[in-house]
Amino acid sequence: MQKIMIIEDDPAIREELALILENEGYASLPVTDFDVIPEQAEREHPDLILLDIGLPGRDGFSLCAALRKSVAAPVIFVTSRDAGVDEVRALSLGGDDYITKPYSVPVLLARIKAVLRRAGAGGCSGSRRTAPEPDKRSGVGQWKNGGADPE
Image (cartoon, rainbow, N blue to C red; front, side, top):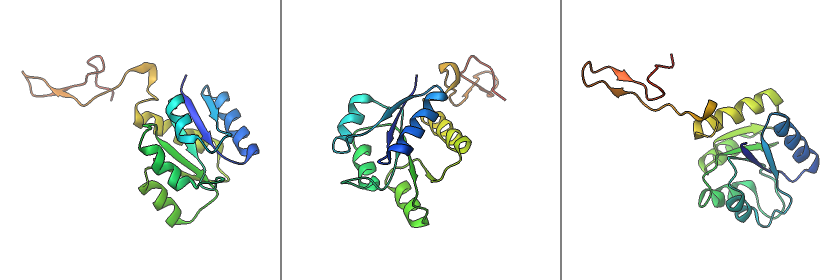
């Protein structure tokens, strides 16, 4: 089961996100102690992190930069800040996507699935497709996922 860490200071939103994720078959890891987030992320090894910008004691921008030093999980910012400059800053500091509140649940879930897929954690049945290798006889690429071209 894929684990998604929720770093959100609003308890109602945090609980809503946890419920949405659990209903979709994810394990949710809601954070309530905002002083030890990088350590908790290293310990829990989440597959994805949902990160708010406005947090107590530390903003999500600096937290994302700190997480990038020790955690490989992709980060999706989920925030009420809708200025383009915030989105650019979040993505330039290592965020993988940016979603503004209020969010559409189907869009949020689609973006989570897409980011997990790109990160290699959301593949169907665990198989990963890699670039085709040329057939030495014909020079035509052959897919490594059981030999079948996925198209």
